[in-house]
Every structure is written in C-alpha cells, then in structure tokens.
Length: 245
Image (cartoon, rainbow, N blue to C red; front, side, top):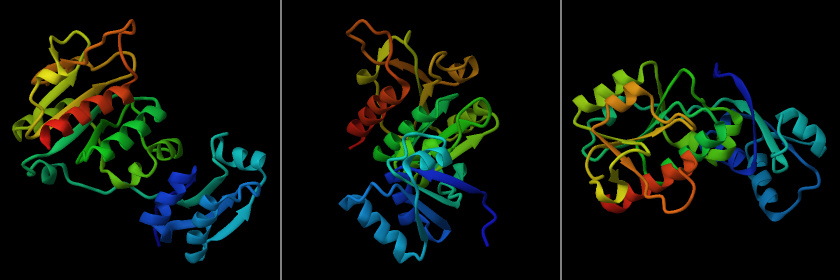
C-alpha cells in the first residue's frame, strides 16, 4: 500500500494525466453533472475501466471541495503521484543534458506553465530550491497539464552548491538578466546546458548570478521591460531547441 499522502486534483488534463501515468492510485472521481460532452465521456470511460467510483457533484460543491473555480467540471482524489525520480549525478553523465533552473519562482501558475514548457522542449529535469519557492500542488498540476507527472522536478537545499556541481560536470550555465549585454540569439546554447530563470520580481539572487558562466537577455522592442517568467522560459528553451536540432 502506498504511503503517499492523498491529494485532490482538478482540471481535465490533470485527471487525464493520472489516468495515463498512475491509475492504480486514483481513488475516486467527481464530476459536474452538467458536463456531458464527448471529451468528458471518453475520460470517464477510462476512469470506469479502472474500477474507480464516479460521483456527480454540483458545480458549487465541486469548487468548494477543490478550493478553486477552475475545475473544468472534473476533479479526483488520489494518492500523490510524484514526478519521475532522477539522480542529478546520472543526468550529468548525459552528453547533451538540458536543464531548467528556477531560482525562487513562487507563483504556482508560473511553475506549472514552466513545467509544461520544459516538458515540451525536452528538458531533462527542472531544478528549484526547496525554500521560498513554489512546489508541486494541485494548481501546479492543473496548469502543467500532465508535465508535473512526466518531468523530473528536483528540489535542492542549496541552489548555489548545486550550480557548482553542474559546473564541475562541464555544464554551461546561462542566466537571464535584463542588464546582460548578450542577447539570447547571439549565444551558443548547444552541448551540456542549464538555463536559469529568476524569480518573478527580483530575478536571480546574487549567489545564483555569481555561478553563471554567462548572462543573456531577450531583445525587448516595446515599452514593457520584461516578460512573464513562464513566457520568457518558453522563448529561451525553444531557442535552445532550435540550435540543438
């Protein structure tokens, strides 16, 4: 019997991801009776095949159980599914390893979006500090649309020490900063690489910055000074993907 804690997840992609990746730990499913479209019927068919009970719950009660109004009419209770466990030492043996480092991202929506983008870009793992940073929650799982269950999410006690470990393994560390001189499109992003995205308002911390091999910025042609961190993450990761193809 799993000793993982029980969680409530909500949203179509989050429930679908558990059905695909770890159906044995799905305990029960709750559905808004007013939702009876083809998409929900197909998902509920998969739930039924696993022998999981389905309870039809009024929209207001469903939102109350989930603590959110963004349930998409479906939620579930399950034993927490953890992202794939991956040793950082093993990852660093890979010749072309691609890592995303999030230095203190606190908004769960941003974390979820970054995980989703990282998965799409083929990132090998996402690294983040344990303290003063968002961790995996039901909201993160919903926004990540399954990526929270598919991509290794490694939380570390000391990020600066971890970055030194990356450097010792010949990983080139690129940090994003608005004051950087080099633009992302002028930088070589091939080989063993870690891209660091700073926190929503303050950016990278001092020790994180000091462990970067190079600082880069996005060219900003308009009036705004910066992009949302999850959007900027997408730009950086897919420029790396373009170069590495």
